[in-house]
Image (cartoon, rainbow, N blue to C red; front, side, top):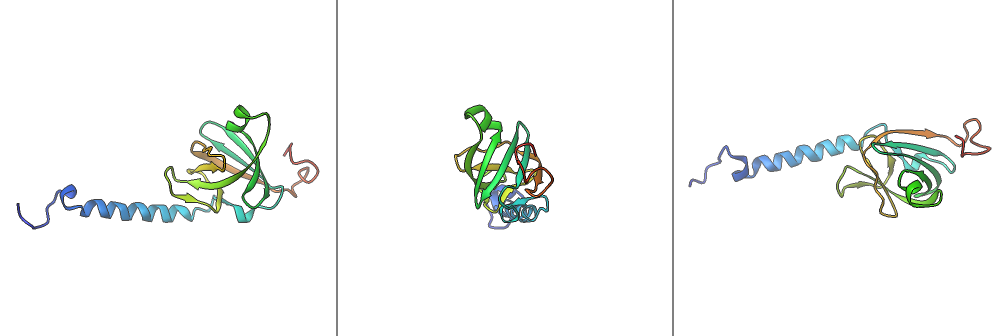
Length: 139
């Protein structure tokens, strides 16, 4: 066996490292996605509608990381809306964006260890939109 580089990427490890760099680069580009709803952009009473592969969730911003949530797992496993923290969004692994409430293509993670299926689309309804200032539930 010689010490010269081989074309077999698994023996040299070079190919594996370059794939890792490309993967991290893709994550960084994805992290700048303009469709992401960031916690810092929400105000008390704003509502975020999140449609995942399997469910629809309604999240009312209560301030900071706290949201009152209904739909999906929360409707199946509790008597009504539940107030929980939103940890952020993941790419499907352990890398989490703590500043993001929801973004298409990501997975929403709640403070009670519930994670959604992949997010398909997100809509923000501002508290000051017509009818929302009086009662946010029908919005």
